Image 1 (cartoon, rainbow, N blue to C red):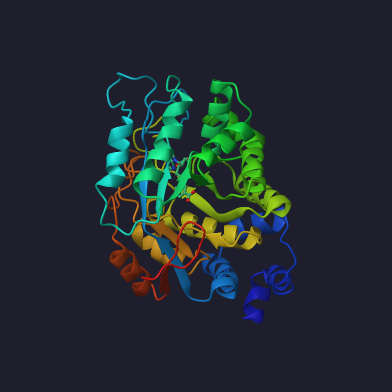
Image 2: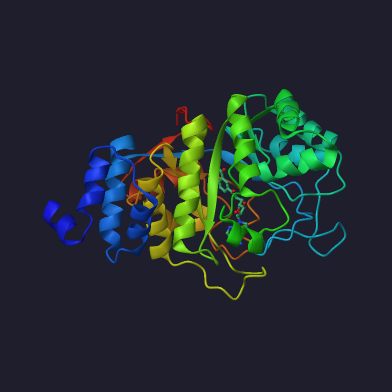
Amino acid sequence: MRTRLRAAGLLDIAEKLDTRQRLSAEDGLRLFEHPDLRLVGWLANRERERRHGDRTFYNYNLRLEVTNVCQASCLFCSFARLQEGQPGAYTMSLEQAWDKVRSRDGQALTEVHIVNGLHPDLPFSYYKDLLAGFKRIRPDITLKAFTAVEIAFFADLYGMTDEQVLRELMAVGLESIPGGGAEIFAERVRRKIAHDKADADRYLAIHAIAHRLGMKTNVTMLFGHIERLDERVDHMVRVREAQDATGGFQAFIPLAFHPDNNQMRKLPAPTAADTLRTIAVSRLVIDNVDHIKAFWIATGVSVAQAALWFGADDLDGTVQEERIYHMAGSDTPDTLTTSQLRFLVERAGRTPLERDTMYNLVEA
Ligand code: V47
């Protein structure tokens, strides 16, 4: 293998990885531009197996999007509606949202993952009551809710600091925040695709506050649209720096752009090869975040299986009610049962392990 790596011009990167030296942004870019995807994947798989061996994590979760009314105008979004009353706009009543959990009484759910539009007219009490109600119905379920972009929006709308918002939500049951809203941190791209929501610094600052307050969180990257490869690497390096400061990120989740029904619909979706490479480079550059997640709804099921050999060790979960990706063209099923998730991990040649939000193992 040394000979092959030397011939391919990747021996120096392999040696850095062997001696636990950090890859530079230039190394990250070389990995993106290298003609041999399998070799990049081989390096990423080696790092994945060093950390996790064969183990592959999934969880029993429910995804809820309680409103798609959103005052932001992100070019990639197929889910949001600007105002109540527009075709397709919806906001669940608290009872409707709680029923989603009540009706799953017999399910061994461990997580509810909530992401919403930035609704300009709901009171803060709606969100607090939402969480408190879920906790009343199923105190055992972890609430991973509201992206950093939503937290920033709440703070501005309700006249609070970001920390006050997080503290008040934690007081009623918030236990983690999901990684959504990161998109691409680079200003050139963010200004074009997501100009009217929290910027990169605020996104990262809110995660840092959440970590200081004791929460573990995730971080994402939306790739495959108008960003350049160096901007993907820049995003990864910023995640790595933020993680150096707090240690609170559990998983990095590269999210493949889906072009249907949004303002960037003329762009092609990223290829499977691009998705696998992006997952692999993430595993290699972000050396201080434990888990790289191949969110099966974003990658497609078979690419998620392949990703388990390109650096990913987590697939996310049963999901059940996802809308953001299906409205943007994802052709995966809406849900996979835990048995189906286990089966597809085994068919990929890996060992499935059910985890909870904090990566504690759950007896299957
Ligand atoms: O922030 C929106 C992305 C994110 C599109 O934390 C799109 O465990 C592709 O963040 N094509 C929300 N992506 C989903 C998300 C997530 C998913 C799975 C697990 C976790 C976690 C977080 O979805 C948004 C945005 O980046 N998104 N529209 C689209 N057309």
